[in-house]
Image 1: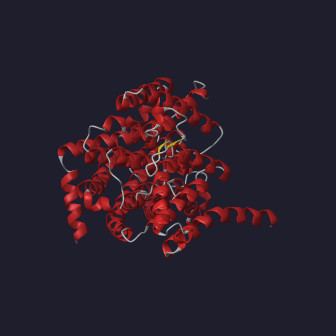
Image 2: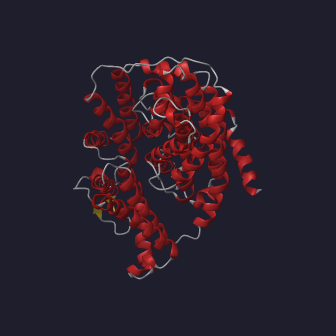
Image 3: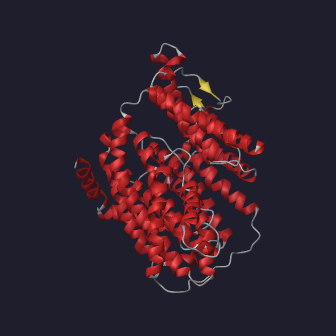
Amino acid sequence: MQTLEYLLQGFGVALQPVNLLWALLGSVLGTAIGVLPGIGPALTIALLLPVTISVAPESAFIMFAGVLYGAMYGGSTTSILINTPGEAGSMMTALEGNKMARNGRGAAALATAAIGSFVAGTIATILLTFAAPVIAELAFYLKPADYFALTVLAFCSVAVVMGSSRVRGFTSLFLGIALGTVGIDQMTGQPRLTFGASELLGGIELTVVLVSLFAIGEILYVASRYRGSSSQVIGVKGQKWFTRADFSRSWKPWLRGTALGFPMGALPGGGSEIPTMLSYTMERKLTKHPEEFGHGAIEGVAGPEAANNAAAAGILVPLLTLGLPTSATAAVLLSAFQNYGLQPGPFLFTSNPQLVWGLIASLYIGNVMLLVLNLPLVGMWVKLLAIPRPQLYAGILVFATIGIWGVSGLVSDLIIMAVVGVVGYVMRVYDFPIAPVLIGLILSPMAETQLRTALAAGQGNWGVLVQTPLSITFLLVAALFLLVPAVLKRLRASA
């Protein structure tokens, strides 16, 4: 009952006219960037960070939530109509959705994607509403050694899962950890990795790194591969609404996709890509129409679309309750909290209930807005694809530069932005994942502080790190992330 009271108070915040406007703005922006290939929610929120500094935190996070959910809705449009996922979580939708569009069933594919996203988003938000306070209560019992083990688990899982190889994943992770240690050591007062530059004594501004890696790196990468060709958009044909037969084939995949997406999104390294793949595979095995898979099966759109929306709500559970980002977008959201001087975790529910419950309530409102925006306005969103890439990315570059200059007004930040942007470009060229850099950068101070606190409490005895059941469990799971893929690879080779 207490949760419902808090949720009602959250609706009191989210339904304020100004916050409704921010939610609408976030939903429109999210849908637009979901439609445009290559511009994901992480990049968009990173770009918005500098310009939302003067906005109230409740309003800013309500807008960010709209961007996060909207990107999942909009990503399906480009997947279905031009066979190019606007967002990574929509990549499986392209397999069947584009075939449906080519067969004249684009409207049915878009409808099952939009309704499935609404159903999954609503169910996942209900789960978030009731699960988050319970986990936040349990988090009070975690000790420094448990938190350190949790960060180790996050490091290992993200480095192993989010990359084409473990070497690339860990290289990215260590780069992020190195960036996170730049500046003055808070315990000893000694400068670290500053190379004598006084500008680096305060550390590297997180917003600068986020904008550089996502915006500048992506712009350089797109520019280097731009050939002036544009993708052909397939018109929305067929019935406006899908049939009763389409509904009967869609509702079970919606529920199964939700059941997969929510817990997977909450796991470190789960993200939205893995649950969509699993959902597609599951629907392919369970379908009564296997002959349609590969030629436009509606189950192959309904399941993955539900999974990626449920995963979007799932990433908020560890983020809000433990301060643990499980994906690149969650890492950017965590940095947004830090921009406002807030630290997500169990204390956030007691210190800033208006912010937390206003954010959760806005997810319900945003879902309704997105359903209204996406079903009748598909034709309008498709027109965004006509924006020429050179003008679009040039605009993003100008926006990013103005944003960074507006935050600090320091030339050194612009130089760091250029250098880190080139690093981001090189990482994309050689297929190094970006997310581990962010996780390493954001979580390394927390890991260091918790490790030092645990060792101080244990008077230097390293055994204190494995004295609680939770820390042992987290470290064992981290070891499994490291060892299981290698063991499976060896077993396959010897089979």
